[in-house]
Length: 97
Image (cartoon, rainbow, N blue to C red):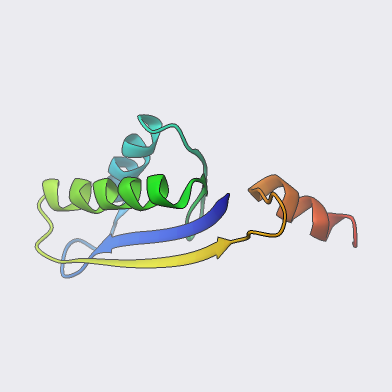
């Protein structure tokens, strides 16, 4: 299972991007993926191929709202030696605090 953080935003549009973020979150509501919005992006966990498909739909939702250019940043943790999740990653750090 992969954990991905994605940040998608329009270039050259309004200063506020909350309507674009909301559109991306609506895309994820229709996907069978775990996700969590944070102040600087959205974390998604699941099958990497399914995540890539969802990210593509998220980008399209920004274009659908009128953006002419979309900039996206992905951070991917695709672990194969054991099952990892967003919660497991947080718990691992919290146990050490």
